[in-house]
Length: 640
Image (cartoon, rainbow, N blue to C red):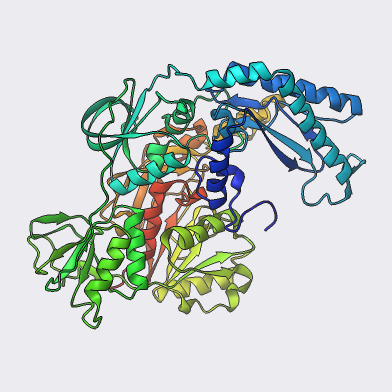
């Protein structure tokens, strides 16, 4: 694909805050050593647009200081002086807002700098020179001259205001009186550790609290509440990077306008699937960090071993076991063995399944210790309650062969995020299949086929659709994500259908909207990356490892009705938008809307993921859903 992606096709200019990619992680190390007072992100835009520089467009995040706003304007005026002198066109205060924290202009702003984007008309197609639609020739020499001029003019403005820049930069890191002083989070130790790792990458300080209770804004309830905790992670704002903490953890960012360049919600407690309370008081956090699991030793006489299932660390452990040819089962129902309780999805590794593996205990414990997983050895497969190990409710996990579509019709960003998930996070093999080669591909070589987000309208003709359906009937598992579902909706045998809008607009009303108000009016139908409370049926394998609530990052207003013949695993009855912007008409259309579901077709099934849980690799809480779809759902040995 064209553009600026890295190896895994990530747009690194949207990864600053999430630091999912190795390039970003290395860049952040240097950035935090340098901590510049001005940071310009030089870009290119369409050939028919001249040049853009600061000041930026609304919305500005509320934490951006008056000085940062004013100094952007000072820099812009100085840039304009040189552009006017040379007769060069430019524009300001349009399109490029300062809200989403993961850009090369916003991230520096939240770190105290004057962060700005400069955009030069051109891009990959401009070459040495190109004729624009306005009739003039834009040359590479012109483009270089424009960037050089704004770069030097920006340095000039900084030099002329060096004392003010230094004093304001220092003031930025002084104590601030934010409403919330501490963010207290509890949940799976693995998820807490993952969030702590992100804090380390941004050099944000945090601590732990052993036991207590805290009152404040409850993320789970989306209102004031109280939370009891043990071994909680606490991130407080009484530190230099308090502004960045507020931006990353705030329940809901204020918007001066809903017309934004990117998503409008990203709250880390919900992204990591943690219970959390934002407190107006500082919470003492001087406890030692929880220790990861102790070393596991083999128990040669054990009938088997059991392990929990609630995090991506567990998923990586399972993938490693499968790749090492260790047979693993999972339980469909809660069970109790030797007085210890295990929830749905827990892993069961029996000696009988692995009787032919001479070094079974040694290999298993080595993998468990490598992944810091706790294994409980049991001397019997007889359950205290729930299913015994030989029950049909304790099912064998097969070693699925996974294919994934790429190429025409597939979003390169969505493909890249899914590819990255398999290779770098789950560590499990996936084979990309070009959509141009799909007709000649023997799908029976695969157990799972993934359709990442995209527009498959010109790809899936009737013959290919029938080929995929035949493969599903024979036991294949199709995972359709986001836009891929559109190509299946309403087609024979696929039970997914679009919801009809609850309130259709009349043409006459639309025509009466003044031209100048059309952009604002269109926002009523938009959802711009918002967080919605979603109900989960966690008795279904797709939702094993979750409780009954999931906070989903919804990237658009697509709405699908409940499956009439299938399993509605994740769904919205009455839309509850907990963060980000959602237009009033879009909200109405989400009533009784499917988010995640499974439909059986013959021996196989289709898994519908209306919201992409792997979007930009930062919504950590969605990744286990995707893993469940691969390993747990559509276990043909289980009788529904």
